[in-house]
Length: 123
Image 1 (cartoon, helix red, strand yellow):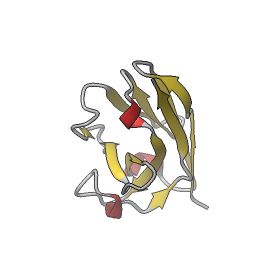
Image 2 (tube, helix red, strand yellow):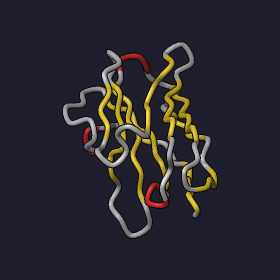
Image 3 (tube, rainbow, N blue to C red):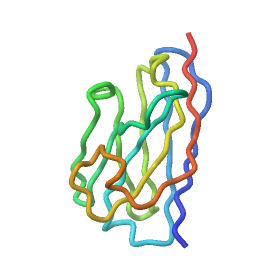
């Protein structure tokens, strides 16, 4: 059974940092592309960052230079280090896994999804 479980969300002040984690099970983690997506109330889900099986990364313009995606294949865990957080970063953050991902920030490319973890950035 495939599972993706996010953790690390919470409240943080503007300019602060937060690290999200996503632990995977039930599939061959090292073969998959992994992504972080977010969805704020009333908005569409958007791709934030992605990392391929070879370690290459992609970032949305809105987070490039502030967020870092990484993974530990020995722990089947994906991370998202978020620095210099802004109020507009507030959202539910989801991790996702996809086996054949062409457009890394496009959610339809991903097969499996976690339940999400909430990040709230307050002034």
